Image (cartoon, rainbow, N blue to C red; front, side, top):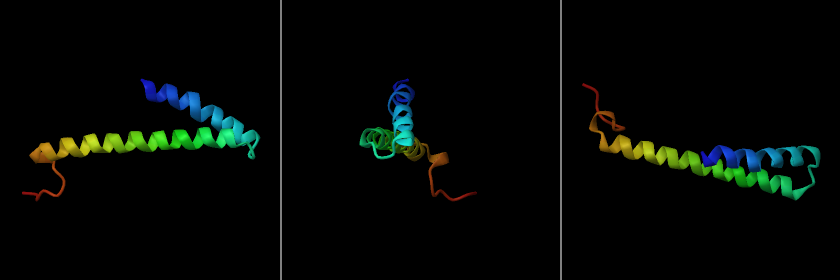
Length: 66
């Protein structure tokens, strides 16, 4: 539940500020910091998926089909 709140708290104000005043560094800083947070969340989700796929032999990547 923390990620959506953080997304709204940082990315939306950053978007508004960067859109209205493109020279303002704070708006861009907020946008870039949240973009990094989104990449981190996606990386974490993929790591969890890959770990679960490697422990389950029927769904592991690269297995041969019957």
